[in-house]
Image (cartoon, rainbow, N blue to C red):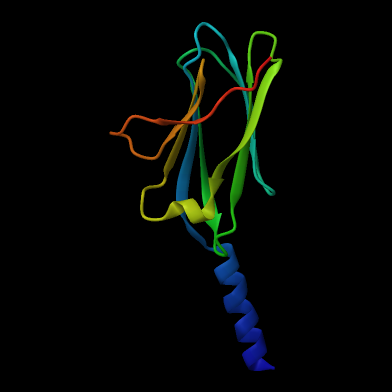
Length: 130
């Protein structure tokens, strides 16, 4: 019984600990349009944001010890917010020694992504047709 109690305490400590802090960024580089942003995981809602051109959201989060964290984002092009895209913005398996920052950039022709601050972002998604 004593061993079970110790095991449960150690397990709860491990579950409470995290792998490390990562940063999820979403930036508006649209041409004179606002951007609606909503990012969330199963456990966390990172808030609703309306970004003017040049603005960016910044959210820090911890990956869980089981490495099963998933954040997805919904983006809406203003001013009428009729054009919408949803995508996975972070999965634990992406963490492979590249770095803890995940930058998504909304541009007129699509959504761009990079983890490397010194590398230009690559286009990952096209905006759906209106």
